[in-house]
Image (cartoon, rainbow, N blue to C red; front, side):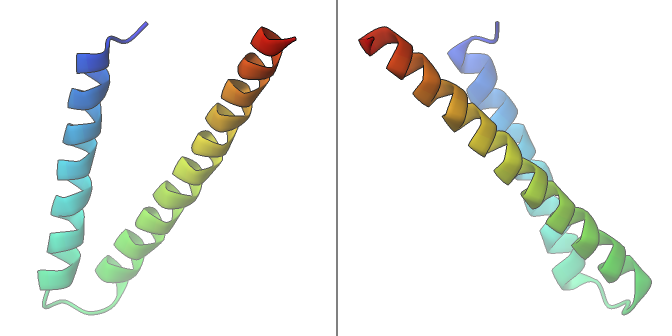
Amino acid sequence: MMTKQTKVLTGLLAGVALGTVVALVISSKKDGKFKEKVSDWLCDLLEGSKDKFAKTMSKAKDEVTKMHS
């Protein structure tokens, strides 16, 4: 199990990585395929994050329901 500090550090590093990629895309003078690939990757990443968040929330709700039953 990950400790709270590990989760915070992991989130921080993921945010830095994502910010770096976004900055590279925005500042890139190249048009075309590079921006398209990065944009597609970011969309996939965000979509996957939404799915994981929804699953986690569902599990949390189930656990709370079990505790109150």
